[in-house]
Image (tube, rainbow, N blue to C red; front, side, top):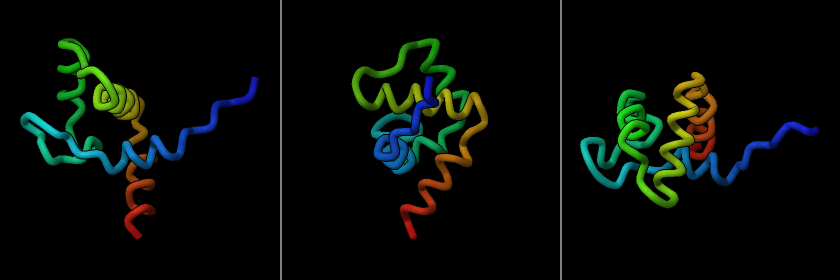
Length: 78
């Protein structure tokens, strides 16, 4: 079995997506603290694309992979 290759488009979108509502409205998902994602994990993530991105960001933060997303965001802005 071959290892999965990251979906570059999704990672780029995830790195540059801003929260559309709530306490962290206007913040990049990467910049939102992990506790906020834990709260949504217990309450339920939103439906659709936003919820999928928030779930992915929760996993990234849980596993300490924020630098990966930050590097994508930095490269894209140059």
